[in-house]
Structures are given as structure tokens and as C-alpha cells.
Amino acid sequence: MTYDPSACITCGACCSAFRVSFYWQEAQQRGIDEASLVQITPWRVAFAGTDRQPPRCVHLDGAVGEKTSCRIYELRPHPCREVQPGDEKCQQARAAHGMPLLPPSCQSPII
Ligand code: SF4
Ligand code: SF4
Image (cartoon, rainbow, N blue to C red; front, side):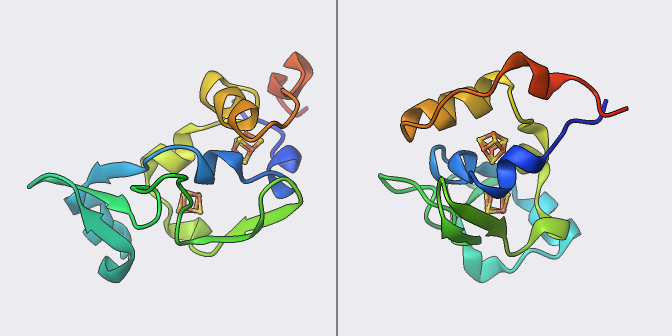
């Protein structure tokens, strides 16, 4: 299913609300710069900045709630790809930043 990603351009909340962690080998496979990662267990890494409070991924560019972009969009790992506009994690992130929740219509597939 394809979702309308237009809300993300003026958001970026999910890149600055959670620790974004994944298996270290995924970083190698995707060619993600090791310098942008912190080791959190022997087998898992997280994006630097998402391991702090308040979290903010080192790869996020721009101002949350205004205009943002991911500097490594093509390389981003599965936890970044799994969040979809309007899903539970998206809404949690938006709420954490005091942003309005997205309407259910944003989860309609693009025709
Ligand atoms: S929180 Fe939702 S709308 Fe905002 S960037 Fe993430 S997926 Fe997109
Ligand atoms: S890698 Fe990109 S999509 Fe993933 S959390 Fe960081 S800024 Fe967001």
C-alpha cells in the first residue's frame, strides 16, 4: 500500500521522538556511515542523537513542524521505512511535538 508522504515534508516528528535502533549488519548492508551510529548492545546500533533526550536524529535536516528532510533518505534503515503517515507511531510522535494528529484520510492509498 502506498501512503501520501506530503505530511512528512513539514513534519519530521518521528525522527525526533524515539530511539531509532536496528541490527548493526543492516547499517553495513545499506552503507550507513558508522560515525553516525552509537552502539547500544553488542548487536544493535542507534542513530546518534536518537539516544538522547530530547531525541533528534543526526541525519535530520531542518526544523520539526516546519520543513524537514532526511539527509540519507535512500539509505534509511527499516525502522525509518516502517513509520507511515497516520499510523500509531506517527501520531505518537506528532503528539509529542504538540502537532495535530493526521486525519484518517491520510492513510488512504494514493490512486
Ligand atoms: S511523524 Fe508522521 S507525518 Fe511526521 S514525518 Fe513521521 S511519518 Fe511523516
Ligand atoms: S535516518 Fe532519516 S528517516 Fe531515519 S530517523 Fe534519521 S532523519 Fe529520520
